[in-house]
Image (cartoon, rainbow, N blue to C red):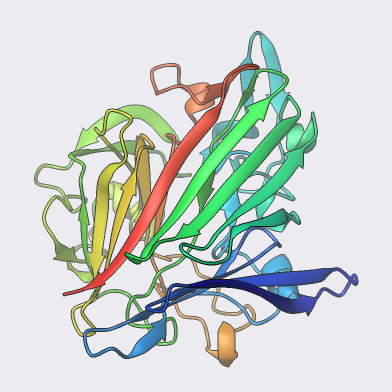
Length: 351
């Protein structure tokens, strides 16, 4: 077991970006202080052959200039806020518009493009680090000075956990998550259409044509969005269902019934390699996104691998999208004296 650090690269503005590598002897996780971004996860297949299973880049400038948010911490508000505004305690807060007329994943310069302070908590046994960022009052339009700690830990049982802890000095809204794209066959292996997915949810949030929640909950019964039993992504990704057409594939938020406990939310299996990833969380929802809008004209991924649509899938554990504008949704409001505290665990194995 180990946690080591090295220089990842230097941005065109002269900022040195540091990479940290967690290794438990069976698998490794590499992340950088820019955006708290997960740049690689190396795990074995059923024959013991290692592969890097997350999309990403070899240099920091690509993370700053390309879209898609691969591997990054998202905040202050992951996912969308309709109309790029919300009202809290009678005050309207206007946000940066970066997705049609809406706000997406934190704004113009969200947490994905911030430099996080990293402190190593343990470099042996089970390697762990804490990443810290203080977001000033008014940043990207959000109220309150927000102090965020994200704990990364790799266990001997091949569980990689992300614990998000935050406090504020003024009432605000908050939705932190991670935007890693997974391809369990290896990031350089093409699309994820043959990946098999299971999601522990019988309902998802209806969206409009701009992927903003309508407030209506839809049952998955008899619909292409039903992942209650394992099935390949390709089975229904091209369905003519309106909710599928809006997202050009799967880009929907599934509501979880976990009672605030860290329980199994989803499972992904790549049949050829046997690699399996189970996702546990105490968050109230999980967004499935199958990389439908990956921009293939942008810089290539690691090692010069060209981009393709559906090259990876995201399972973003989170609060409901646009919840500040939907009082019927679980609250994403954080008040002074309260602590935002949620955990997500990615467990890797082979079958």
